[in-house]
Length: 142
Image 1 (cartoon, rainbow, N blue to C red):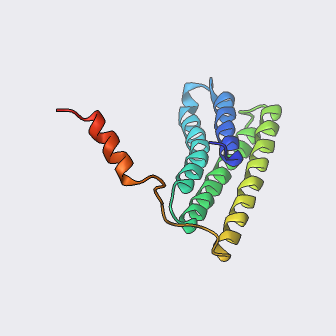
Image 2: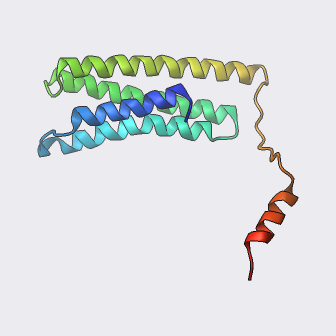
């Protein structure tokens, strides 16, 4: 949760929600699509982060970038149709641009780690299994 691009993606979702809430009923499908594409950005960043391999992480970041592109395309269309105010569009666009650049820098960094073999794909438990066994034995009583 400390990853800046993830935090920025959460903020993008929040900003998107603020801009599209209150749209008329006839535009609820657009609201749903706008929220879903913005929501997909932070979810794919998180899912990639939780994957074991750097290749999977990078793949999910590219999916997040795709969702971000979908989100921005919606902003452009909504702005052109007069559905969002120019000030809201500018705020969303600036935020999306920052997020896109952050994601691209993260991908670049992870690709360097992959090339340098500087990524650990295995999950290592630091504590001995006996620690867990003794704790489990203390808490489970029949």
